[in-house]
Length: 396
Image (cartoon, rainbow, N blue to C red; front, side, top):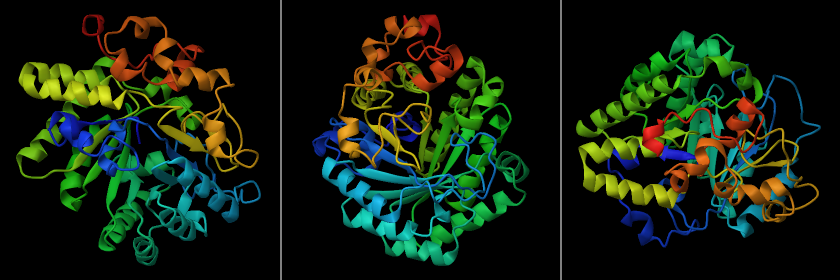
């Protein structure tokens, strides 16, 4: 997704500024690991295709529960119509999410349909339902990637997930997917309860030979809004990102090259740049060019969300604000309709952010960071993001 900061790409040099230029920086031409550097920013679409889930995660942004919501959800035919529109609009990726998308019996058929329409299909899942048979079916239909949510090892993860044994079942699902030849990665949401698990997660990457991990900064949405007091302090965030950089660099130095990203806090980009400015000024210059290509937070531009009922949101954390419903109008029409003042402002959010953001030297590479978090913490959608941990001297 386009709200990511690539630690391996930027800090460890896995991507050069010339790499996206070779493809013309068009979403339709870029390989998946370079999509965030596209020029056209065609939206990666998260489809929360069901609200039902077999777990009870304490930080679930969708308030998912183990209940049957099928009467409200977009049908298989409606899903196919959605993908027809996304394909013609030029969206490069559809991410099937939930709830737990594997509880949809038509998931495999919809993956098959998406791929045949030219979309890259990926899944966000808790991993516990990936049987060998399902993994083989997904591989047969050319599923590009499976992201499995883990928030620590064993008991720590199970406490977050609300179900004992969830960690063991997720590891089994990861192994089943890898055995079928599908690329698998991890998704880890950082907070005070599990920040000490980060080294153990890196150990798990090495042990299981997992090639990708996304470390998510906490967003105050859904059940996660109750965890605002458990978010990291600014200093703790700096230490966590530094640790992630150090462990990623150690893996690269040992000849392992996983894709490591942080998500949902664009302060990470300048933070990486400022460190490299001291360590490797030539690489720092490359990173600054890549950050400008990335353009910062992409909610309402390069990332979109469609919920289980067909409502369109600026990203998957904006469930409280819908711009329309795909049952009434195509997604492409909703996404390009600037008559909604919030949508219009999101397309040019740098002009509207206030507080520290308005005078920040990094505004062009951050775009004001995460609007949902700013709104949840202050009540003002355009206030500065309280989780920007850069100091006044660093942004001056």
